Image (cartoon, rainbow, N blue to C red):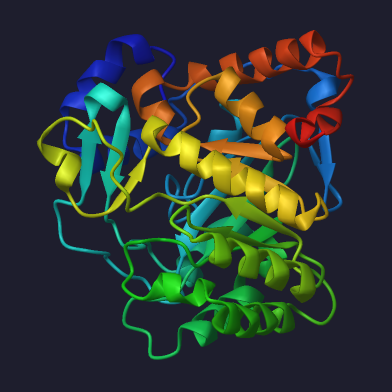
Length: 354
């Protein structure tokens, strides 16, 4: 995320994707990346879970997997950043090569498999943060690939990170850990969410940390209904819709289109928005939703909000457009709100359902 991204972006995109990613992380860690000017627009502020978001545009999990640069990312203009996915033990993920660009569609396929340095390493970094200025940092947690008890993995992660997280995300929707998505089934999900909520500290820091569930786009109508019922009954605080898809829409071009893994970027937009909209309808707007999947511009972000999202996240679009996209989307959202006669972002949430 360089200020001179127009010059450096094409070079990064010619590199192997993971190598380009490490260079970007290193640049952010080194302080070489200048901070972006934040757009002050009170209409875009959102109050959720006792937290104040100065704008609704967030960095999705998957970029800062080990909590190395959350504050540097906030400095690029994000209203919030989600780090992870973190697992109890460090793991290297799936064999390489495992990340593939679909340049024509400005999309990506990845089968990384929760590669991260583990919770202990991330907690040490999060503990050193100076919590000043704008920006919310959420922590996304998952299970180790070789775990004998995945629910226990999630429960083990919660007390370790709760005091350092503004919110927690239970990620059961990655397609790259075999069997993980089975935790979205009704009985498994009830047990999982009960274990996670019980694992929060009983008092002190982290006792009331909001807990969200991140779901897949590749769900049947019955799956979506079951998740909505369990989410409402469990007492969790919100949902994130959606993760990447194992589906391959017609028309994808290039030799990488058939690679296994999760597809992200514009080809995911329609399906992820459908799931988001249906989840808003089924929960009657009672659970705040974060919309993610295929957002490339302000129109996409606004469509997610009108479909029911209180906040939005992106990642893949930044690979192709660079960090200037963040302020472009924030600015455009303000214009679209006013054009539709809304005084605040909250007024526009779920507007399509009205």
